[in-house]
Length: 375
Image 1: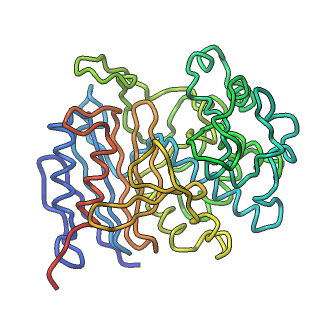
Image 2 (image 1 turned 135 degrees about the horizontal axis):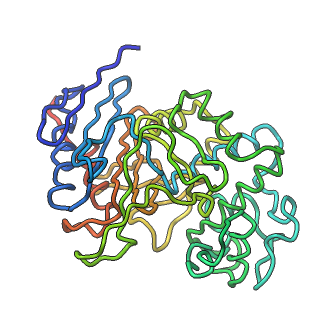
């Protein structure tokens, strides 16, 4: 496979043209620099994929202490993009007849979804994957989360069960990390193996995602080359102190957001997933059947671990985003997976007129997918 790879760094513009002219690369590079200069972020990277062609750009730094640049090999925490991997494993198990999307949480996890009007008998696996279960989002109770020294999945679900549900199962939509903790627990019950092993054996290894994995337990490190992750703990004032959150306990996010990957790996994964090379057609249809969202990303709909985002120019892209302390990521592309953009910032704030890094990511997607070239 013949690939063209170009790299540009802050202060070194000049990406390689692809089909249809510059294909938005120069515009993408300008936005990367703008995110650092105007947005005040430590560093940003993006990989654009056009079929066999790949372009990588970066601005700012991977480490504010040493000034080291970000690189294509940099690994970072991908937050809720983890959900796409978990949903893919669940759908593979469904394709193998080892579970059904109509199975209830109570069938697989007896007595776990119970208390404060939660009832696992009324919640099926599909509702977990598309966030229509109504189950309380455990990360909304940070006080309870901080009380635990260890974070096994059961403790995360117990936090959720100490609150009433948001709505009756199937009657609404609300983003809940608890849904995916439960989905991960079901994967482990159905397979008898750790979720991390299932992701590696079913996705990372067969598709050559060498930098992609779910950490075991509470291992706080990022294996291999990586950027530092910087957080203001979601404070919005310009003078808020910056903390290094590179090492943290991933078990508190686990199946909902604990994975680590690279931009190239995410483009490869979503390219294969969107292109129909991971799931059979009927399970592909299940994954991309969406429901309307509420109080989430604007112009978005949610499927099973994936979302669609509508751009102002009329293009609809598919993928997922993820936000964790010090690391925000977006991986979206065309429905056939032929064109992809994955971007990551190693800071969780923006001072440049965007409400948060999602505004930066949306601009990047528009630069790539909303260009109109003369033919």
